[in-house]
Structure formats: structure tokens, C-alpha cells
Length: 185
Image 1 (tube, rainbow, N blue to C red):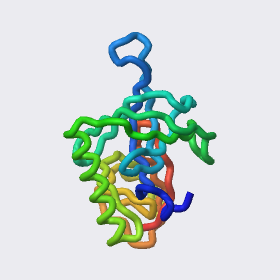
Image 2: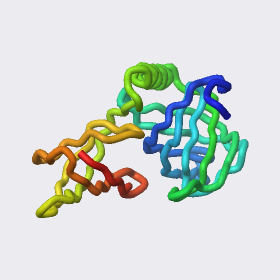
Image 3: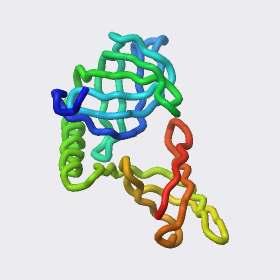
């Protein structure tokens, strides 16, 4: 569906997410780790390791820079795994949040809107451990962390300067396992 026909703007962001299925106090509750594909005011698309049936009710925990946001949500659609994804795509509609968590969620989305208007890609302040293979002469490995991420790039903090134009192989340490990227300084 085209963005202009949607009720709420979606932001393409990959953030770690934890979903809890079933009764949290009961023996039948199950925790799933996955990641978001996009987020909007009333819902999110995400990838989970197992398929969930439309209509399933889940508790979603997102770690936002403003603090954690917990939402009660309903699965509205389930699709196949995307290319290079480990897991199945799902669309969730948010049913409810505590007032504190709703404020965090809305503050985060407002920040994404303001960044989307000032940059080609919105940036997300995320701190992840990263291993860099610097493809120079001589090649070397550097350990560091991210400062922010966007669909177009990543800002890194490394123990030494890397010259502009240097090719890098990155391994980001996310809860779902390492994510490999290639880039250029």
C-alpha cells in the first residue's frame, strides 16, 4: 500500500523486540525474540522466529532511547519470511499501552518525523557492539560500537581513525545474532 494512502506514516527501523504470547502468569507463556521492520502510531511490522496466527494477542516490549515501551497488540496479518530473514513477517495493531509507555512511544515517533524531514534517512540512536574488518593494507580488526543507525548508514565509535574511502565489513551484535554489513567510510 502506498504511504500516502495509509492512515499513519510508517518508519522503516530495525529494532530488537521481545514478544510474549499467552498468559504471563501461566505456564503456557512463550517469549520470542525478533526485530521490527517498520513502526507507526498504531502498529508495527516485525519478524519473529515462528509464525503467529492472525488474531493472536501478544505483549510487545521495545527498548526505545526514551526508555522501554510495552504494548498489548493483536496480530493482524502473517506473511512469509523475507529475503535474507530468519523468521516470519507479521503485522501487529497496538490495542493498549500504559500512559507512561504511550508517551515514550509518541516521543520516539515525533523524533522520527522531525528527523525524516531534515535527513534523507531518519537516524536512530542505538548503541550496539560492532566488529569491523578494515579492508586496507594491512587489513585489521577493530572493535567498537554504534552511535546511530539509519537505512543509509551507521555512525561508529572506533579506537582509531579510519581514512575516508576505506572499505569495511561490519558485524553488528544484535539480540537475534550478528548482522553482517559492508560499507565505506
